[in-house]
Amino acid sequence: MVKEDLKYTETHEWLKINNKEATIGLTDYAQKELGDIVFIELPEIGAELAAEEVLATVEAVKAVEEIYIPISGRIIDVNSDLADSPELLNSSPYDDGWIAKFEIVNKDEIENLLSADEYKKLIGE
Image (cartoon, rainbow, N blue to C red):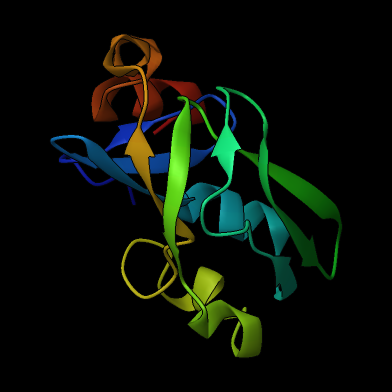
């Protein structure tokens, strides 16, 4: 499932952009590829990350994967529910399974994100 109102990355993160803020999570495609997610290391609130730096680390039964922030930002909120219930990344990747919210530092970087149609082509939908 690919939601039309979101932006995407080639590394399978989604972003919901709302003015100067963005919410980021793992796509439905990514969570299916990973399998059952058993742990996530969340970023620190206040952390400033440049585009393509590691945002979080996800441990699944099949693999450990790093999640990258696709555009520069300062973390303003994290989904603390994931600490006790990392399986939300599997069961609700676009809603309850969001990872973090951040203040966008460089709006020009948004141009590097994929549209829903471009992401569908990437994953063969």
